Image 1 (tube, helix red, strand yellow):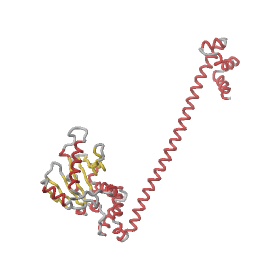
Image 2 (cartoon, one colour):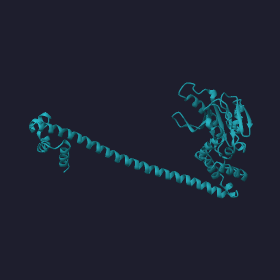
Image 3 (spheres, one colour):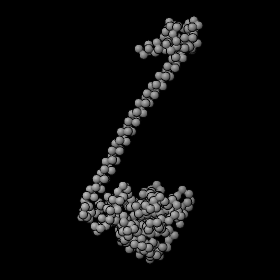
Image 4 (cartoon, one colour):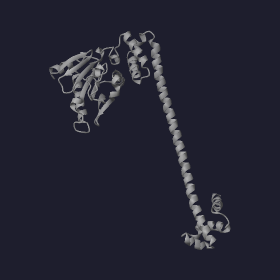
Amino acid sequence: MELKKKETDATYWHPAFFAGIQIELEEDADNLVFENEHQLGTKPMEIDVLIIKKETDRPVKKNIGRIFKKHNIIEYKSPDDSLNVDDFYKVYGYTCFYKADARYVNSIPADELTITFVAEKYPRKLIEHLKSVKKYRVEEKEKGIYYVYGDLIPIQILITKKLSAEENLWLKSLTNKLNETAAAEKLIENYMEHKESSLHQSMIETIMRANQKLFQEVNGMSDIFMEIVQEKFDRKLKEEVDKAVEAAVEEAVEAAVEEATEKAVKETTEKAVKEKLTERISLIRKKCARNKSLARIADDLETDTDEIRSLYEVISKNPEKTVEELYQIISGKVQK
């Protein structure tokens, strides 16, 4: 009985594969939407990579994507893992679930789906099962690309070690078994042409880490390796600096906002107090001009005499003062 092997290095290989398949399909990138670890429903079921074509009728030029339709499910196995029979049924089930999980009934037609399996090792037992049990026909269309015929959903199997080095350099090189210096040199040469690309950076870092001995043996490779390491360090440093700057800016903005808010509240409060006090001074001043008593003015304003006594005394003693001048006298007394 074949034991199921649990991948322990998924985080090691899968990000690089996600970068690699985007590199392979970069010629059609404007027509493809790439989703890494597309989650199915609310439970922990994830498609390794989901690629959605924007324009369904526009064919993908790259050999590994010619089979693509609207919705393309990708299953990737890392170099030390195998593609087995249960993987086939799991991914087929995920594909059906993906179709059924759409918001509207049959909004994802079955004939707009494809499945792609990617593995380094040739899955002999799976191929035999597909032929003998499922009665499918498996045909190698070109180096490392096998089409599976007989199902409603188009299926292909990509064997990375058999892919063309000319057509599929990066996916073919996504392994820990590189053994030719020429292959390493070709990778570095291609990388140097795309060193500003984060996708190429992710790939070369993973491949070099997985094949350190080979890259150390290549003439001049140590300098390039150190350059790549330095670039990675610089990127990390820049990220940390950017985070620190962003945090400092946020803190400064928060402090500025808080200060501005306090100032605005204070100014608004002072303005409101002044308006209210000025209005009361004006009313009392007019009533004093008519020789009304403190008690009569309090009745008119519907308040207690004690509440307006201090205002009344200042205003009655300074009949020649304007409202603003009276306010300055009264507010000065209040502040003292």
